[in-house]
Amino acid sequence: MITLQFVPYNELNRLTPLGRIKKILDIVKENKIVLVEGRLKPSEEAELIQRTMEEVNREFKGIELCTIYPENKNDDAINKLKATMIDLLIGNRRGLTVIGPATIVKEIKRDPNKIQLLTNNMKKRRRR
Image (cartoon, rainbow, N blue to C red; front, side, top):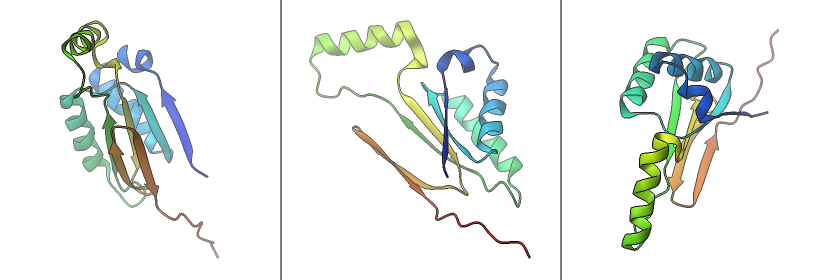
């Protein structure tokens, strides 16, 4: 069974950058796929990857990460201006970040209209 956990922007926004990273990693280490409302800052993404690499071990194999951001490449000038104003008002709240444990998530593919989350075939090992 795959578990998705949604984390609203407001829940992460009140934490420090290291607090955000710790919260996300704690959830991922529970073998859950995290759906974060909004985006992490580039420095936070880099720190998340660095912390992940430091914590890789036999049980925790790392993460897969993907950020989806609505792009309006073909919009006219008025719509682009509106999008810029929205970005100024709400900041990194637009978009979606998907983070999952590498033991579950094999690959995350994205395009402007969809996310494809490819998972590993998880078979429970029997202990003798």
